Amino acid sequence: MSEMIETDVVIIGAGPVGLFAVFELGLLDLKCHLIDILDKPGGQCAELYPEKPIYDIPAWPEISGQGLTDRLLEQIAPFNPEFHYNRMVAGLEKQADGSFIVTTDEDEKFHCKVVVIAAGGGSFQPKRPPVPTIEEYEGKSVFYSVRRMEEFRDQDILIVGGGDSALDWSLALQPIAKSLTLVHRRDAFRGAPDSVKKMKALVEEGKMNFSLGQMTGLEGEGGQLSKVNLKNADGEFSVDATRLLPFFGLTMKLGPIADWGLNLEENLIPVDTEKFATSEPGIFAIGDINTYPGKLKLILSGFHEAALMAHAAKAIVNPDEKVVFQYTTSSTNLQKKLNVK
Amino acid sequence: MKINVVDHKGAHHELEAPEGYRVMEVIRDYDVGIKAECGGACACATCHVYVDKEWFDKIPEPTDEEIDMLDEAFGVEDNSRLSCQILTDDSIDGITVYLAPGTEPEEKTGDRAA
Ligand SMILES: Cc1cc2nc3c(=O)[nH]c(=O)nc-3n(C[C@H](O)[C@H](O)[C@H](O)COP(=O)(O)OP(=O)(O)OC[C@H]3O[C@@H](n4cnc5c(N)ncnc54)[C@H](O)[C@@H]3O)c2cc1C
Ligand code: FES
Image 1: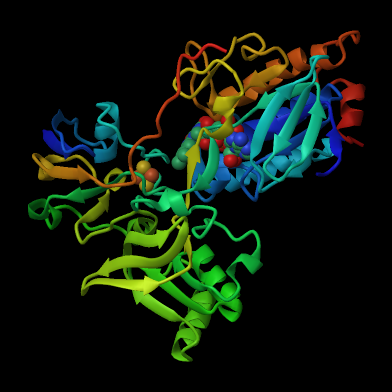
Image 2: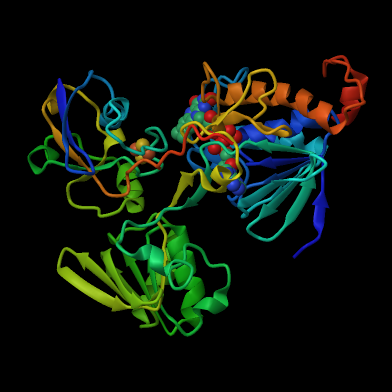
């Protein structure tokens, strides 16, 4: 268990709205830590449509999902936000003094006065193949990511997929595997051409196998996999496997947020439109995750919500400090915070 | 024009479809139950359908981008398509599509008091 991380605000989700919240909170001198299950900032913009243009960001006639993310990171850099990626926020507990302890699935603990839920469409999690009984094997012999290579040493490994994750892990695990088979539905790959070349060379040398196919069923006992059934155009077949790694991309799931005792409406968090506060004092919800009359799931709406939320959050963190409303254009005080020279 | 949709439970829906939309959008707007998480950006494969064999060859061919994205779908068959990449126009009036496994919307938790 690591030490407690102390901060003013924990932001759950580093999508565009969580990122901009850092700016608005930063102008009010509030220090932020952001936690995201993805391995990068930008939420849907970076994960689902990095290259696609957005046309309705004020003053940006056209900007890509990744472009917007990069600009936001540049804009919030003066506030030195701290990012924690590849972590799911698992727990949120209110303390007797009104502060919160936020815990992650990596066993970190954050102590803060305000929690901002900017969880968008939910946490990005690996897609679970609709293969019967797969749940029974998860975490024991079916994995969606490799956290510890040792789990895979001397195992019969089956990897399914045609993107970079499937190829990269085939290459990385092959040397320690007892046997390794890559299965993909077609003989074309989305992954990097160089990885495809390396994979094919290993197959040539007889060091790993490649089969065309799709999964139909699993066999094993007590969570321990022994065989994966597959089919392709030639018919059905099976591969002996003690470890399975399916890579079919990510999907958004509400996740642990449902367990925090907050009011929920159809998987969204109802808030007021003055402070964007949830049913729990000190917890705010902004961006795609919230709902209120007239809500539009637009990035620009999330930005507005972040600004109003920040002032309400300030009143909780520093109740005795009077906040004077200022413009960044004319306030030397704000410009100093932004490192304007 | 009309499109026919067979949902995950096998129920048949005949939907009146406006022209110039995508098949996914029609299915979503009638609340038949399709995840279509990326909203039609060809970035999620959760709008995967099987197109009735009689219709499959009559609709415009998939782009390379769509074929690549089908790699993230499940149970892909020769008649698999992403429904967000099929436009509703006269040429598909009366088409039948079957919602594929893995495109079910996430269950909703709602109206729960704290
Ligand atoms: C294809 C497409 C095109 C779009 N085009 C536009 C457009 O043109 N204009 C526009 O305004 N909007 C557009 N949108 C919508 C826009 O992307 C969203 O409104 C925006 O991303 C919402 O931002 P957010 O920060 O609220 O949430 P998200 O971007 O969804 O980010 C939330 C983040 O929180 C993380 N998270 C959630 N729960 C947890 C947890 N428990 N632990 C750890 N991390 C967690 C998720 O992994 C995710 O990274 C588009 C969306 C899509 C899919
Ligand atoms: S809706 Fe995402 S690929 Fe069609």
